[in-house]
Length: 93
Image (cartoon, rainbow, N blue to C red):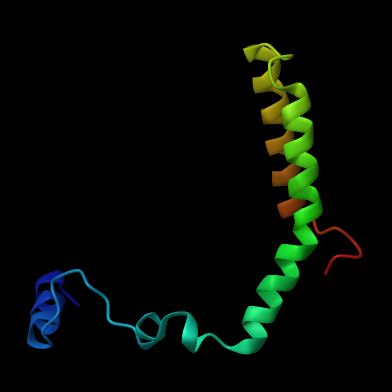
């Protein structure tokens, strides 16, 4: 569908061009499914210890690493996290 035609359709419904009307967006958090909300909270709580551990390690290393070493550490962590996204880890899925 051409972009001009999409803009005409939105204008016919009183919406500015580029605005996407979505009922889920209109309902906000009140319309969230309870199960989805519970799952989100559960995942947040499962990740919280790692967040706190990373924050603690970062505060301990702050000012002790030069820029080159810091970049190496960040690149290694990005490589490891990227590999974990590609290769399934047994026991977590």
